[in-house]
Image (tube, rainbow, N blue to C red; front, top):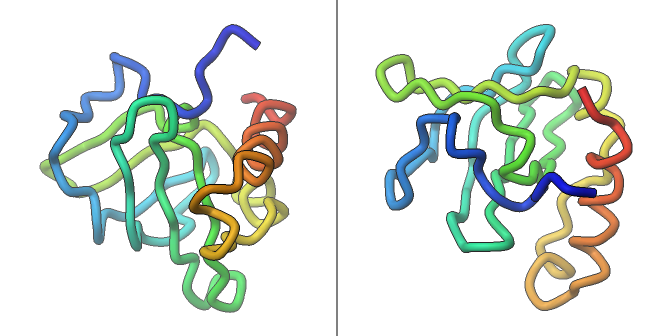
Length: 116
C-alpha cells in the first residue's frame, strides 16, 4: 500500500500541534461523532472518535490517513469513509493501543481494505 494510513495527508489543512479534541467528525454520509483524543505522532497519527448514542457509545480508532479535510473554523474533520465502514470497524481498545503493533496493523488493514 503506497498510502500512509497512519499519517495526515498534506492537503488536509491540519497543523501538527493543533488540538482536534471536541471536533465533530463527518463521514462521507453524515456525522459520526466527536474526537475524544488524537495524536500527531509521525507514523502513528490517529483520532479516537466517540460515536455517542449513534452506535451506543462505541469508540473507534481512525488512522489519520482517513482524514480528507480539517475545518478549524467549523471545528469539523471530514473522513473518506462511510458511517457503516466506521460502525463496522474494530472497537478502540485502549489497552492494546499502546505498544501493540499488531493492533495497529489490524486497524490499518481494516481501513486499508475499505478504501473510498
